[in-house]
Image (tube, rainbow, N blue to C red; front, side, top):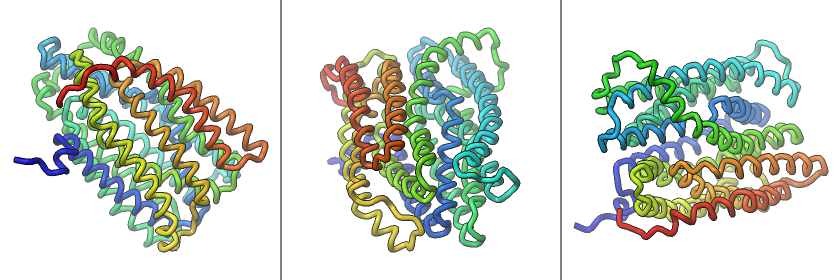
Length: 446
C-alpha cells in the first residue's frame, strides 16, 4: 500500500507527535503575540521580553546539563538493550540527576530574583519596591525554575526512546498556558497573568513528565523504589562531567546570542524598540519551532546510532531531517516577513515590527544560523563537542562588536550584518569541516 505524503515526511511516532507539539506551539505562539500585543502597552511588552532575557542569562548555571543527561539516557538505554548495562544503572542515573536538578533550581531562583530586579533598575530605572511588575518577576522566576526541572524529566523520557510521550504532555501544558492567559483581558494591563499562566503550565509539565519517567519499562525493571547506590554516584558524575563542561560553553554561546544580545540592545535602545525586536524574535521562534521537528525527533536516534557505531545510519537520519528542516525554515521566514506586519496591524497591535528591509536582514541572519546549527547538533549527538570552543569565541566577538557598533550609532541592519559575517567565519566553516567524516559515509535506507 502506497504511503501518504504525510507518512513519508514523518516516518515514526516520535516525529508525528513532535509535529503535533510544534504545531501547538505555533498556534499558541501566534495567539500569544496577538493577545499580548493587543492587551499590553509597549512598555509592559518590553518588560516581558526583558523577563525572558534576564532569566535566560541566569539559567547559565544549568550549564546545558539537560541535553547531556538526555543524550546519556539514550546511551544507557542502548547499552541496556544490548546487554552492556543493567536497568538499575539507568535508575541510578535518574536519581543522581534528580538530586542535582533540585539543587540547581534552588540556586537559579535565588540568583534570578535579585539580579533581575537590579537589571530593571539599572537599564530601565524601575524602582525596586513591591508592585505588580516586581510580583510578576517573582512568579515568572518560580515558573522558570519549574521549567528547568521539567526539562530534565522530559530529556530522560525522550532519551529513553519515548519522545512522543513528552510531546503529548507538552501539548496539554500549552493548553493550560493558553486558557489561563486569556484572562489577561479581564484585568487591567499587567504582566501577572502571563507569568501565572507560564508557572502553572510548567508545574503540570513537571508532575506529568516525572510520573511518565518512572512508568517506563526500563525504570520498572530498574526498581525505582530502591535506594540510591552512593558508590555509583561518582561514576555517573564522571560520565557526564566532561560533556557538561563543554556543553556549558555551548549554552554560554546560546545565551550570549539570544538573551545577552537583547540585553545589550536594551541598554542602548528605548523600551518600545526592545518590544519591537522582542516581537521579531517571537516570530523567529515560531518558525524555528516548526522547522526543528525532524532535528528534535532525530537527535536521540543519532545518539543511539553513534553508540552502536552505525555512522552510515546516523548520516541517513541526519540528511532526512536536514533537507526538510532547512526548506521549511526558509519558507517560514519568508512567510513571516510578508504576513506578520499585516496581521499585527489588523489585530490593532500597540507595538510595530521593524521595517521590511531590516526584517529581511534579521531573518536572513537567523536562517543562516539555523542551517549551521543543524550540523552542530549532529556533532553534539555524536559526542563531538569541539564546536563549543568556536561557538563561545564567536558569540563573545559578536557581542563586543555589537556594543562598539551601537556606541558609534550603527543601525540594526549593520549590527546584524556584522553578526552574519562573524557567525559564518567563526562557527559555520569550522562546523562543516568537522562534519566531513560523517557526511562522507554511504547512505543507507532507514
